[in-house]
Length: 119
Image (cartoon, rainbow, N blue to C red; front, side, top):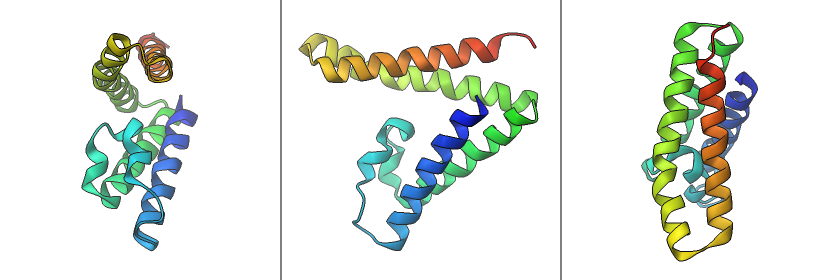
């Protein structure tokens, strides 16, 4: 699970640094799946969330309870943020959005379930 947080943090960090170094080279929409609407706050939100993801990943490596709880909360928040897009895709029968959104929900539920287990 820590690797998932490190990969997401690296992705957001690279996008945030690119946005600061060369404005307009990458779209803010690239962070939409991870940031859930916060991407419009700009590159500093990308860097802030990258730092938070790295911190949670580091805490998971050290098997800290706070990191486990934070990861569970973030996974559940991710499910809640994906429900509207999956519902809209199901109504409109837009298969790519429905499949990717459904996969995102399943992965987040699996992460929350796995982290909820006792050691």
